[in-house]
Image (cartoon, rainbow, N blue to C red; front, side, top):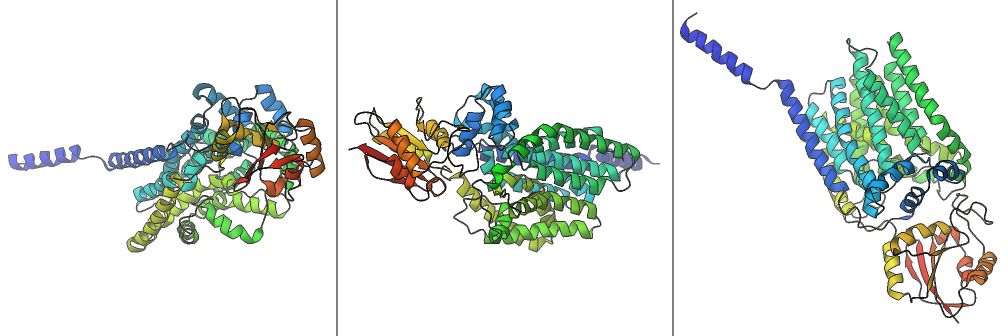
Length: 530
């Protein structure tokens, strides 16, 4: 070989050695996409996180997480429908962060951010399973939907268990897809131990975070059976049995708590209307309940189309067990909740089912990524427009319940010796928080939890007591202040607790009612001494 020829060979070899490997380039692109989405998720979920007043359910979270450990784990299951695990996590969290609105909500915000890269890992695994032609686009679309979803932003700014439920479901989803990859390979057909551990821990947390976690766990079990049982080795079956058995064993105490409170679901405030269910189901994927600027009709069509296309792509590509597994993860929890509601236990509330958005956005991204370029641009642009418009509305939304306005009115108009009555008794939670400065409104007819108090239970909770007109008059006579002090009466959800106005009239007995202030289902009225 001549000198020039050898020089050319060495130059080509050096150029090949210095060129980045395709795998390394893809990893850098993956990390760039994930980093950008995580930064966007952080910015959106912490945006004005402490500006809105705590609403009733967040007041519950604050109150329960203040209790001692024995009361939280041994007394609250007598009247609280949800497991005490989330309140325990919040109790530990607030020991370091404080108890302001932003501090209480930041645990959910962090969980909401952490779910975003997990969805990216799921998208990468799904791309490998399906042999996606544009895997980075699939990842970018899935993680973009997760980071920008208005509904996920809303739950990440609530001091409630739903963002942590989403995170636990996302952990389980990612580990199930990684296990499915292993099952189809030759090096670890039994599945890697870390993935089994992650699936077990994620499923156990899903069960302990909410009463409806059982529906999500059932979907995970079905998905695992679909991809893990066919062609299973003895080792794989053993690991599957051990994982499922340990999860079930750790769930038993929670199951007993939920069964003990089952009657609360059937007698609670949730109403079931099967005629409205299809629209509510479609609204679940991508929107939150307060959308007002943009009609959700376009969103229903776009997201239903994308999810259907993604499942169709899996089915026609021969990945039918994965297609059925993802369909279970996306659809089973809300459909099962609807069936339970139809059978007499109304449990279908969209915000309690948002964890299904993790697999739903994954399937929608697959549906969009496999479309031809022009239809993809049209559908993707429409979806992006819908999301951005509703995201702008979400970031500027008012408080879910106007307790800040109630508190402002009270502070502006109350005299030093005036007192505040609240009905029903759990209304004291948001009112105390909104008023601050050690305010102590008087709960009607007894402080929460009024498990032993006589009266009806319109909300289904044994701790929240309703009274009648005659009982209200008796209560007012026994608790009316002496002198000229004005009573400021706050009634929440009068359609449920005072549909005929009898309680308000009974509590106003012997007094002159002043101007009525109303914010949706919150009423405030001064009762002046005659």
